[in-house]
Image 1 (cartoon, rainbow, N blue to C red):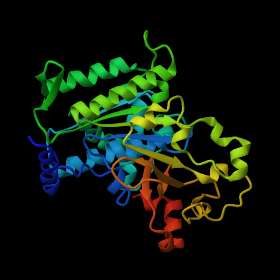
Image 2: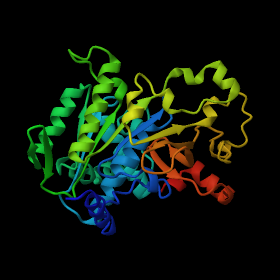
Image 3: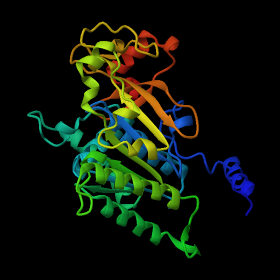
Length: 360
């Protein structure tokens, strides 16, 4: 094959839609940060800003649901290495999200699992059981495979490589290299990590920096050798909230603020930050954020819930970067939606965000 043929082949795939990837539920953002084979994406933010919600809603559940609607059968596989939350709590939140989206009925995880004094009604319990197939088909059907608890990079590598060997083969090109041939070149395989900072240390990787850099190296291999989509979550340094930065108003995450290791920024194709500007508006004087939205219009004055989130593309190896998109987050379910352009924001839209109907 001649050099130009490599590009020509990808153009042909693109013409047939094979390179488009799966929807992440963000129409404008999907042009730049969608779920596509052969891409390594990192989501960064501070604690409690919604980075796990973006991963679960936009990069796991929304693509899975689109895939099921398409009628396709056996060419989607998502590995989720969840080191922050046990599997049972994840599934409970996914149920809460699905019920809310379908029925408009909110059953918070805390109520679902009996953490509150107010327990489930029989109608609520029956409704939850009505969605058993949603979870069972996703997990037992092999579409989403959850590994909770702490894992080290080598363990993750072995799990993913074993799957690759069961769905394809490695052929020797020469004495120095091999190429992976999948049984189904149209299959989409995702490896998701929540989060880099909770990776388990190994004998030869004694520091947190060591394990993070090794995992990033493995993500590169999954991307480059297997053509898998890789996505991980990283915390930002606490220095972002230092008095000096607060004073000059420069607290939005950047690639330099990624915690523990700079290698993630170097290796990733795409880096997305999730930012809540109201968390750092100590004086309460912010009328417009950097892209012209008023975040206070999306704050619930009764309970203090802040819905507004600014998604910024910090790095994009294959397109535009350093620009932001306005979104809103429904905290109880983790649903994230884009907002209309700033000049199209109405009081009715703001009210629908606060009532929750905007997320249905």
